[in-house]
Amino acid sequence: MRVALIGIGQAGGKVVEALVAYDRRTGGGFVADALAVNTARADLLGLSGIPRAKQILIGTSRVKGHGVGGDNDLGAEITNEDVNEVLALVDTVPVHEVDAFLVVAGLGGGTGSGGAPVLARALRRLYDEPVYGLGILPAADEGGIYTLNAARSFRTFVDEVDNLLVFDNDAWRRADESVGQGFAAINEDLARRLGVLFSAGEPVDADAVAESVVDSSEILNTLGSGGVSTIGYAASALEDAGRTRGRGLGLFGRRRAAAPDEGEAVNRITSLVRRATLGRLTLPCEIDSAERGLVVVSGPPDRLSRKGIERARRWLEEATGTMEVRGGDYPLPDSNFVAAVVLLSGVYDVPRIKELQRVAIETRRNVDDRDARSEVALGDLLRSVDDDTGDELEPLF
Image 1: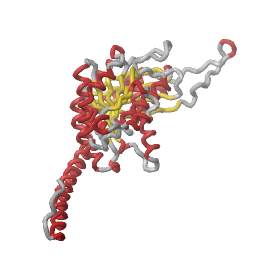
Image 2 (image 1 turned 90 degrees about the horizontal axis):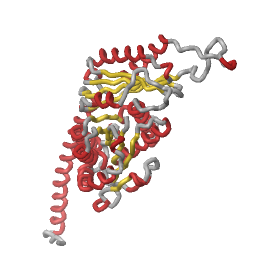
Image 3 (image 1 turned 90 degrees about the vertical axis):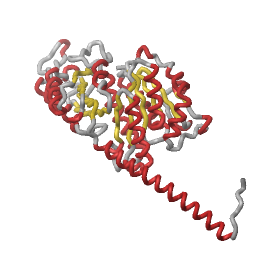
Image 4 (image 1 turned 135 degrees about the horizontal axis):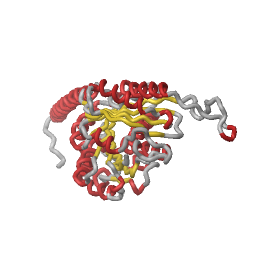
């Protein structure tokens, strides 16, 4: 599946850069083009994997390239004012090669959380291709204002895209990592999951023919439920990868490799799909709330069992309670791993989102109360100055 990536804001640009790096490293071929949009010049300068010609600085007349300071109302205003400039950059994308757009943004900051829904709305108005969002939720310890931004942006972003893939930083950052290390590891994990998913159906090797092809139409149909989606991933190293295990000698004295055991392949695939589904999802949720599902299993062709994939697909149908579960494989001849990606689309029972909304409402009330108290306190302060001087001071202007 060929995707045009548009990262808006600092986090969005970093994730797009990680996806581009993964695509180049693996030869997946799923990135049709990659763009970066920001209000902060320094954030764009920090992107080495996206060419300067594919970057655009917006809002220069208002914020002079210094960003919006976490103000997502300002981020939305600036993006709306300069959206035609961004669309002019999108015109350089080879849309005839694109199956979908993916607008990527961190939902806690200002530029991404404010601008991503605006840009998604403009893209849907102009193009027939579906426009998906990838929203990164801030960790709980990042502060109340980021939670408030995320809650507001989440509600708007969901309405403006054909489907919103969500990644929850709170479920992924480890306490023993620095901020930089943590986000780098998170971006790599996210790129791996999306990379395997979007690479499915793209040709890798002429001799690597899938047992059960997953093509872009199946990904598009799965995401066609709309709403919110989450992705699971699990992988298993092949200890005997690259070794010969046969007993006899073949031509030219080489040892023939024994055919992999079918039962072992089936068990490995079903186990991986269970782990991917019940382990760490990009957005933790109750899996039986999913409307649609998709299973993609990747690895060496001789380790990809049609029976195993079908059994795993049936298990996911039972676990989620939906009959709309698609499945297939993505052969990678040189891989030393078998990996499974599970896409759950249209999930609605998501405790994290409910908590996000609760904290955001509380934060909004606290901000309003603080503003009201500050206004009263300022009035008291000015009155005390008048009392001390004995008369009311005349204003300067």
